[in-house]
Length: 194
Image 1 (cartoon, rainbow, N blue to C red):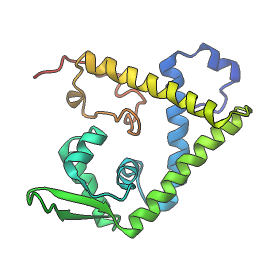
Image 2: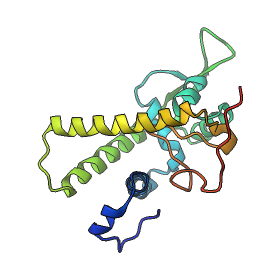
Image 3: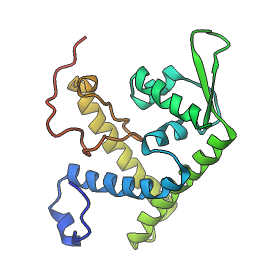
Image 4: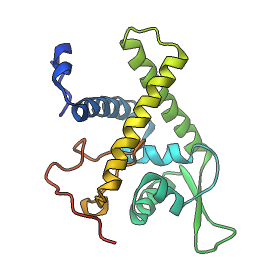
């Protein structure tokens, strides 16, 4: 499902839950890509910047785990962030075989701007709803979304679908699903091999 400017309000009534999620994801990604383009970062770097935004040193292993990415993918992305002066990598004090990663001042500034873009998008979505939702109602809505996201992620986990065989494991709350909103429409799920 791709965004279509001619989409009518009544068209939303005929969409399934995955299609509705796809519309939300695509509209968010379009907004995000448009707004981060002036920051000279790629959409793939956003999740790394937001993960490191808390100011703590994080290991490459933790990033791989938190973003559900392979160690090779994390190393490659960090190399690009390092080349652009957005992160600093140093050998961990307690384990000389591991690297810790933190944002540079430039990286912190960009991560802060990305976080603001996230918050602006959310505020604009609520504004377009023309509903005067209280903070409690917004939090309840977010809790429902979290429950749905976790439930959908648990289905994949329970079915033991191995995302590594498909080339990309989406992060359940921040990651991307690649070019197609639900992964490649041509990939067939295979049982997880232990």
